[in-house]
Each structure stands twice: as structure tokens, then as C-alpha cells.
Amino acid sequence: MQAAVEFYDALFNDTSINKIHAEGRMTLWAGEDFMFALAEPFDGNKATVGNGTMLGFNLNSSTEVEAIYKKGLTLGGTDEGEPKIRSGRFSAYIRDLDGNKICLFE
Image (cartoon, rainbow, N blue to C red; front, top):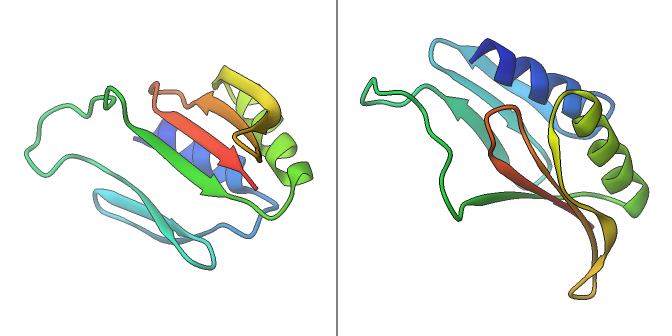
């Protein structure tokens, strides 16, 4: 959990996404129209990556997509698709330290 929180703290540093809660088993970040949380599972079992699950962050510009994509790789995330136009939108894909797939798009 600590490594995951550190990854997302660093990933969201210098963006409009801010940590709003960090207590107990949950840490939350928020943007203008959304919240994102990391939580230890309620059932006490080990957290696992959801197969076919993807989290998307709608960002303000292609510059921000590129910057967060590069930062994610620097922080130890893995590439799942470099920044480019897909389906009419500028987007990039990474996996976090636990293997969760993240879409960054504008």
C-alpha cells in the first residue's frame, strides 16, 4: 500500500489532482469532477489486479497526458501504449506498480 500511495502521490504531483484523505486503509485523491481511491480490501484478502479493468483520467491537455505518462514510466510503471491519437482522442496507457492499467486522455 505504501509503495502504491507513493507512486500516485508522485504521479499526480504538479497536477490538478490532489490527495484529500489518507487515513487507515484508504487514500483518496480528487480532481474537479472525480475521486480516485486506493484501499486495502474490505474482506482482508490480498488486493489483485482486475483483468479487463482500466482506470481513466481525463486531463486538461495533451502536454499533461505526455508529462504524466513519462512520469509514470520514471516511477516504475510500464508502458501499455505511447501518447498518440486513438479513437479521436489524445491518449496514453501505463500500468502502475501493481499492474493496474491506467488510461491518460484529453
